[in-house]
Length: 82
Image (cartoon, rainbow, N blue to C red):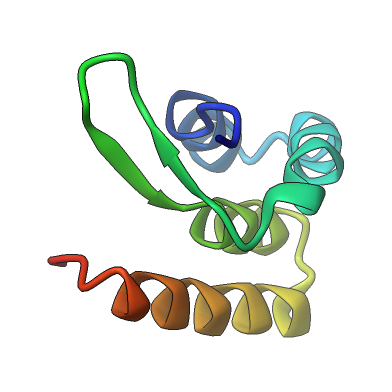
């Protein structure tokens, strides 16, 4: 199970905090192909989606596009609802 990322990526994106986004991106990178879950049997989507948001904050647009494509594929395999 990957670490819960959803609460962390949103402030990075909202505040456009590149330093925090860079740290979080590095921490989540190894978990890109996993999904995250919360303690109440909730899912927050693919880690790759969070990486895409963080890469966008970091202005790494090519990486963001790849992360978002990976997220779509991961969530499609899970038959996730959007």
